[in-house]
Image (cartoon, rainbow, N blue to C red; front, top):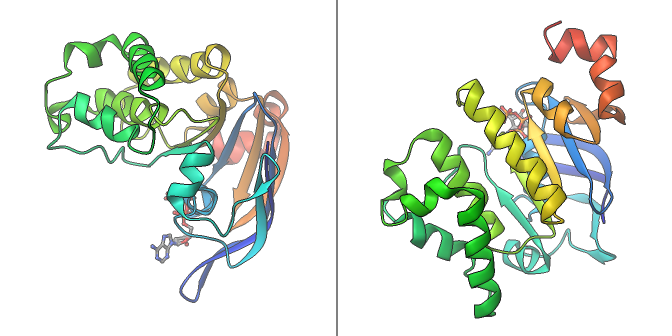
Length: 235
Ligand code: ATP
């Protein structure tokens, strides 16, 4: 479904990605784990067109996307949930969700997806008139995921959904991620520092260090890998 082929991405003179190759098949949950500053967020930004790669190629469902604009990429079926949620704090929950469907015109489909996300996260239905900024961290994460789903993505990019949340909430969010993958037929690309949780929900995992992929394997095998255990699982 997605093929990232040897991409090199820069911020000015700083090279954040030094030739990254990743493949994601339809229906998979893949996770990209690594330390702070390894280049995980930059990988997502390269896919979504926010920070396009300087060289290399990204192909989504057979179409080259590495030179396309972020809105063209959303229209093709890739939505990103950014790190730190970035919901619109002054807009209501419902308005935030409507923003997610901004590029769509299929009214019936929008209504169907709205019902789906409110069913997935009933708390958002209860709080639909409330300003997004007044929600708890966990609720804001639910809203950010829901807003991304309102674009009807085939591929959902999640950047550190567990960041700053209590363990119980993290567990709920990860259960929902599995549900979205299994019941809503959405392929998931999950960036996480919480490698332990990420490797439990993912089918395959990639380990990134200093802008390069250093390991790739089935998630279960990575979780049992001695180096991964020591460096990322605190075991
Ligand atoms: P984190 O978990 O902290 O978000 P990460 O693995 O997602 O880390 P990136 O945010 O992709 O890492 O950063 C990769 C490298 O690019 C780091 O060296 C970082 O300092 C640098 N970098 C990231 N954003 C910018 C920017 N806007 N301007 C300059 N350098 C940046």
